[in-house]
Image 1 (cartoon, rainbow, N blue to C red):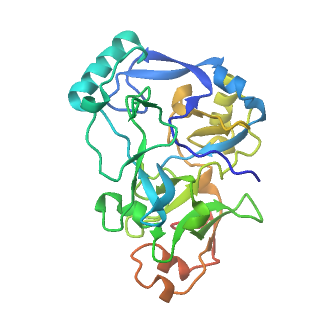
Image 2: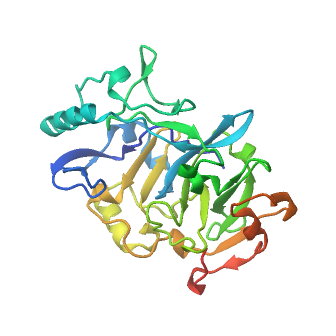
Image 3: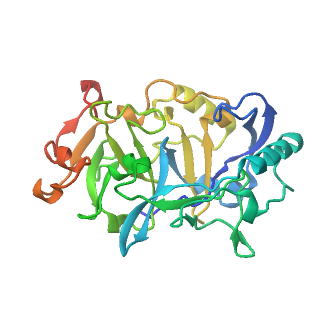
Length: 322
């Protein structure tokens, strides 16, 4: 199985999009909607979308594993955003032109400060040595997740740097219909991007854990395949999202053979998310966290409690918290 592409920039929609008046379904403060037309994006056609691998778009927060302090580290997504004055100018331009094309940024003055350790994402374009904002006015980037940083406490709950491992949710090798939670060496996740999902992330659409027993885990991008995906056709995709049990997902990300990534979100099709039960939340989960309690003795994270229930199969209908 080939390793699929990492997410180092905003992913284009599989359809050509247009801007319409009206409150955004995705962003509360946005007074316009970006919706899909029925025309397939030329970028997708050039990348031979019909031969691409369709994977589930997960609703969490993006992470990245790369070196820091001489060892593999988890990094949290942190976009560098414009200051208030620049953002106001950008939104006014975007609203009047129905596009951000032609807008000019002063990268040195228009953007908020970021932590010293911040790095831009790999696919961010540069001009005169400075990273260039994307069409949303953001500069995607990363900051390392330190264990004592409360802002990233849910990120730090899924890693143990002393042991060098992370809690990962993935399809079981023996049965892709079953998911497993495993402790995976961070070195095996090197240079991958992953999605952090769980109790305290994005409203927890998958119903993981509870307030008393929060559960969070990382999912490698591209690891959850869509079984029997529909053709890349507006009407067929819309019907699939609404009628198929496999369609109870936030969206689809297609991984093309040339490395191109394209996506469709329910919001692009005018559909709600979340909308009841989810495909991911309905799958059985096996806990496979090997090791000893002493090995994770100093952990304040999920490792120790998961060791106590390792190899247990959780069925979603049983009402368990995972």
